[in-house]
Image 1 (spheres, rainbow, N blue to C red):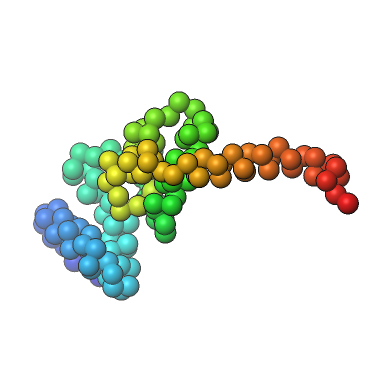
Image 2 (cartoon, helix red, strand yellow):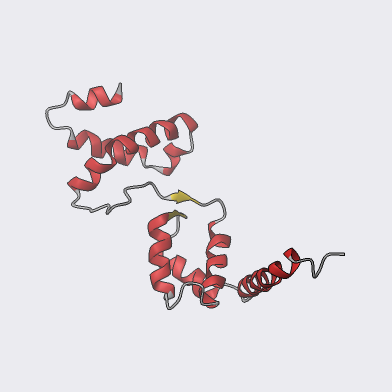
Length: 146
């Protein structure tokens, strides 16, 4: 019904942008029915909005992945960076990718700050997993089995 109403307009762009501002408001999105409408609206009109703003979505054109505990998630990634898991990827570069792919509700600068200041324990978690993985072939061969 909303699509039909928008499509009937001679120039739909103003209505699309007004609805984008309304349906993008966090207070509106707290209500389940409004959130459902917003998801449907942005799925339908995302390309139109991006195109009108001269924004190139690239090959992905996907909605960002929502993260339930973004600070914890970013701190885990910090441990992976520190261990060399991402090669020579800088904190700034990783912050850009996190911001692009994951819905954390954080700005890129704050994501970068979390990456840089994460507690050293996150590196130790990664190191422990790496040690466990090295033991796995021995476990499969029965060395640690009784």
